[in-house]
Image 1: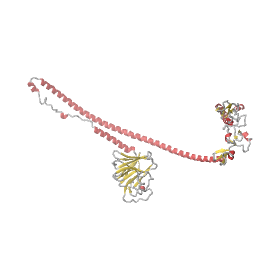
Image 2: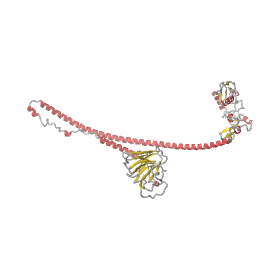
Image 3: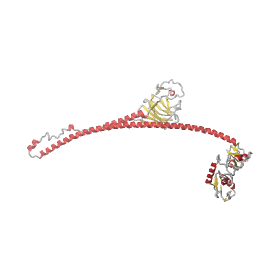
Image 4: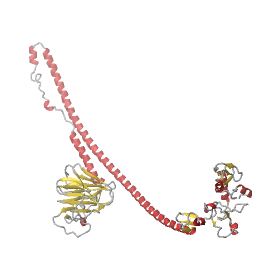
Amino acid sequence: MASAVLREELECSVCLNIYTDPVALRCGHNFCRGCIDRVLDSQEGSGEYSCPECREKHTERPSLHKNITLRNILDKIRSSLPGQQSGVFCTHCIHSPVPAVKSCLYCEVSLCEDHLRVHKKSEEHVLCDPTTSPETRKCSVHKKILEYYCTEDASCVCVSCFVIGGHVGHKMMSLDEATETMKKKLRNNLQKLMAETEEAEKRVQSLEERRRKAQEKAGGEKARVTSLIGDIKRRLEELEKKVLSDIARQAEHVSMLLHNQIQKLEIKKEELSRKMCHIEELCNMTDPLTVLWEANPGDLCDTEDRHDEQLHDGGDLDVAGISHTLHTGLADIIIEVSATKYMPEVADILLDVDTASYRLHISDNKRVASRSDMKMKYPDTPHRFQDCPQVLSSRSFSSGRHYWEVDVGGPHSWRVGMCYPSIDRKGVPRSLTGYNRKSWCLCRTGGQYSVIHDGIVIRLPGRISSDRVRIYLDYEAGRISFYDLCDPIRHLHTFSATFNEPLHAVLCVWEGCVEICGKVKEI
């Protein structure tokens, strides 16, 4: 524990207490920051500033420098005192630092247990927790203790501010009352923050679960794609071996055939060379009889090739056959992989009879919608289309990528597409698919094909060559696309939007029938 001599060296000459946040002037004397600030404030307007100890004068307010070494020494001394937490010591214990238990705002002193017992108990002596800056609890204008809280200015004031100061007529509360009111608000805010924290925690858990599922799904997709690509590679390698083997077999056959032809031509060359030599010898003879006897017109003078019927140009590679084998194999791989692995079937898409118009007949399997000349005996429901021959699917889509196909049945009049469940069920044209902001469709009317949304008609060139149409939905990307399932498949049109409701398939049949084919595919 510090000695009495050491304590004197650690005391501020202004407040006579152990330094709090010690700072030094240019002359080297140390003071509590709060103490020297108050001294310098009091000297403002006098034209000069001076050190409280050596009286060194300054024409301008001197700057304050932290005394790091002194502060570290004080921290170590305070940490060695048992039970000392606040660093505030009793003002009256001058021989050794004794921790203060209270501070008197009226006297601006700090008190230990012993000095607190003999301290005056009158009302003006307001006690608070130990503090080194009692002036912060007093009015900066009237230098009186802060006793009230002005609700209009949200500030603590003294009695003079309330009676004669700038807060006259304002609504006031006692500090205790204001504190309880503030605590009540803080507790309410705490409850709200706790609820928001709980909600945030739930969202974090939900997002973590979604992330976990996404990672699991990604792992499954990676395995599926790896298996798919591996299968394609294996099939391509088998196809490559088959085609290369066919090419090698044909090349060997052509090579043997040409080799035989070359041998036959070599024999022919030797025979012709022999005949040429014999003829030259006969031409050089002078005895006529010898020439005539040895010349055999049937052998030497016959220039026709008796081997022509045995010689030909040989064969060549069957390139057309090789190409056919290659292209057929590739097509088989693509068809098999696409049909069995890339787009798995997930669920049926069926028509909701409760939404069907009275002029539509829905088949028992809920896949075919046919225009009926007679009014169907359907029960009245609020979801039924009244004025347009339309029907929705019972299934809706609010995420993901999906596609399905519809058989439009040849040259009939129809509309196929998607819509929100909030589409109007009465009125023409507002309930008609394509003539509002809640539906997108492909339409055939009078032999003309078009796509329609919000009453805007875009005519398509040409015609749909097949009887089947594919509808593709990418909900997150906001795309609805239509395809003609001819060979090859032809893209017709893509709508782009930001979807804010689930989407249902919708069929509108003015003439003939439309059938949903197979199951929905999820990509």
